[in-house]
Length: 261
Image 1 (spheres, helix red, strand yellow):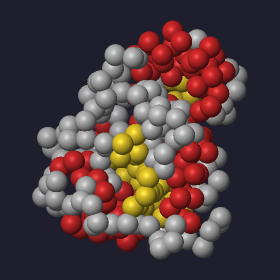
Image 2 (cartoon, rainbow, N blue to C red):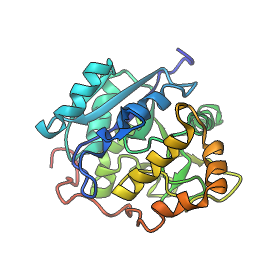
Image 3 (spheres, one colour):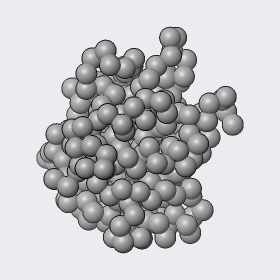
Image 4 (cartoon, helix red, strand yellow):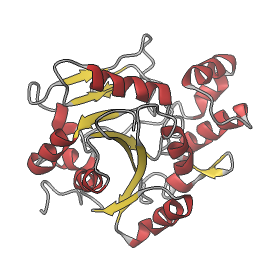
């Protein structure tokens, strides 16, 4: 292990996307998108293990089948209470520090995730939560999101969070109320928060496929190289420029207001 505390990256993934069903298994440069995310997550220096957390519903069996075939640590839990699923995963994986990633971000950059983890680990006094974006403050492109928290903070959130968006988006209880937890935010030197590098629509998928194709056969390109590519080929930016990002309070109506509700 790289530290006294066990650091586990948990990638949440499901098949039931409203705008692009099955997106996490969509092919990107010859591999499922989820495999691209896990591949990149495994290059985060401080991470001791990378696991996939999906639901226990039959619709997510293809994700479980891929995970088993790839040999990934896999946790299956509640479909609509993603916070409870993360708590279950943290317990099963014996994680002391949890890194939340999502399966629809195949341009995830290990160096940015590592910087976020280091911010969390090196802070004195210790932090409960660190991230490289908050709902009202983002300087990194959408799709490079990394959230880090302690096991104790996650378990408190799982116990006490009672708003649907807190259950679906996992970490909001840790930052919704100023002063409730000790938190820190990692900023980029440039404000690039309007760039969209995540996958939620067919246009997003076309954009990411174009980026991977530009670097083929390499798949280990970093975010700075993507920025250079977009400067050289500005037409790529227009592929998904009109896609509207989901708001934090846009939640699945089946999401419970508390665990067990």
